[in-house]
Amino acid sequence: MDCSDPEILFDDSGVCNHCLKFDQVASQQWFPDAEGRRRWAGIADEIKVAGAGREYDCILGLSGGVDSSYLALKALDWGLRPLVVHVDAGWNSELAVANIEQIVKHCGYDLHTHVVDWEEMRDLHLAYLRAGVANQDVPQDHIFFASLYHFATKNGIRYILSGGNLATEGIFPDAWHGSAMDAINLRAIHKRFGERPLKHYKTISFFDYYLWYPFVKKMRTVRPLNFMPYVKAEALLELEQTVRYKPYPRKHGESLFTKLFQNYYLPTKFGYDKRRPHLSSLIVSGQMTRQEALAKLKEPLYDAQELEIDIAYFCKKLRISRAQFDELMNVAPHHFSDFATWDGRYRLLKKAQAHVERIIGKRVRVYS
Image (cartoon, rainbow, N blue to C red):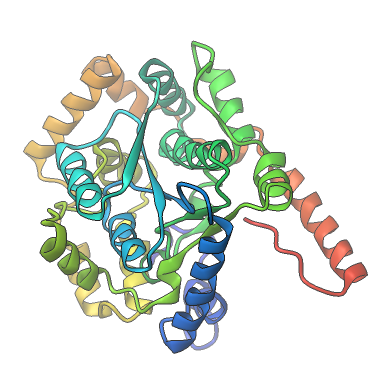
């Protein structure tokens, strides 16, 4: 990591707050050993019992990336019966589509693809670009998770399987962007810069996310990869050998938008190189040495010719000219908190949580 994270700190031994936080969180949430197998076996049994008599016992969001693809394979090994949901926000690479088809065919899963209304998605993308915020991936990420919750509710499913994990995503600067689930922030940006109403784009409200789904509907998002010694290189090899999975040239290569966003927009406009937290995560989880990571950082983010091809496609997809694209790149940067957020509500919820815990004498889970 570097000082592109304005909140980075070092202790007297020269260890940064990211490493210290990873150690703390990993000790509580990552179990790559026999304890993890025991814990996951118990959770898997709970999922099967809750889904008994239903067509599906869980929902699995499949993007075509390594993490969710490997999770789909493991769900088959565990005897789970997931409804696989893929959200097509308009940026799928052909390779991603092919990988998803291979996985679903091999596992025999039912696949539901939710195609997002492109005109609304396009309007959201342009609104975020006009806002000049760093987290341009929110329109995609929010609809992905919102779709999983909506489909889970519609099908009476209580468990959502997520490929999120500490082994490859354990380090990330909070200062770089806010929560992708913050519908208040999303709607504030769209209200300011959007040009058409969001009639079909479904969001998740603060009440739904923190109270209705977890406490009333008793829904739970579980991250099975945190209960195993998840090594990405080994997972990729198993996918290649089992389903003829084709790797992407770079992380998040399954989305053409995310590719340009992470490898051009963020480093050019904000100085954020997402390879840093990604490689740092692999270092602290023991999958890469610091020297190997530094060598990776010396590689160029983009080949010049490839960049021009991707920008041209991006402009064509959003129906803007190259001059308009350059204007959007030059929009004054803004922090997500320059627009309304649900952070104030979250702080009040945490206070209420502490009060309830004092009364009942035990911890109450509040998602963040």
